[in-house]
Length: 263
Figure 1 (cartoon, rainbow, N blue to C red):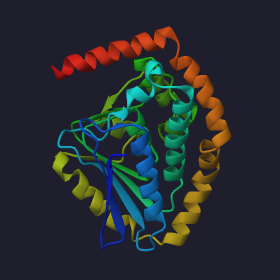
Figure 2: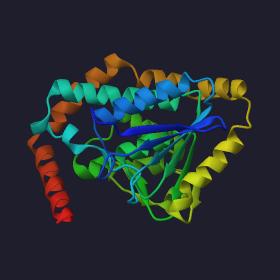
Figure 3: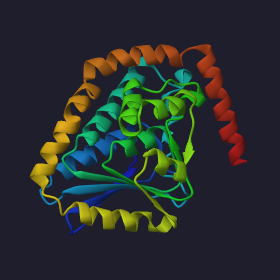
Figure 4: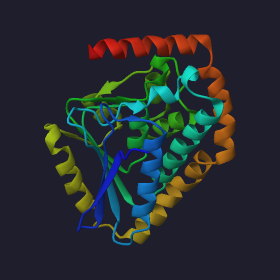
């Protein structure tokens, strides 16, 4: 297993998690496993009260979302796909209800799985040049029901409906107006710096009161989200959809476009 996730614990009581899987931080099973283990380690460290997620890539990409090879039926199996979707969704559910203060420092592109990871955080800061959204439908893939519910809880049912149904990505300014993100930073090199400034301010809040309140807001939804039996049952249905000739054809076309973009 290659290492894609790095953590750096600061003396101020927070840690920075860096995602670095070249070339675009596509998130395969290994990435999600490493994210989950890293979060567990930080939550068990009494000196860590907050965590910032950011990209270690030089290019303007937070993460390109899930690795399409994990979703491409000819290259996977029901067993592998089930393990993949259970792993990533249980991590996201855990992050959503984490006792830590969580911030997503978004540079550039943040579609699909990267968007969902960011929506699980307490605060989202994004560079001015970028885009974000749950765009799976544009690739012929259904957006997970819980992901839709999460976005709807943040920006409202009507707004989420248009975005996820038609696989739309919005730019940073639009994302701020919708409430998908909390703050825009003009210079992308300052995204992490600003995230650390915000973290230091948020850490002034008492942990106990904040954690209990966060639990009231999120625990019920997160427990439902991470339920293994539900996720396995959902994986069977999703794999059947991924195995449809029309879905495979759409992803074939996506792979062709991606290969051409590298030429």
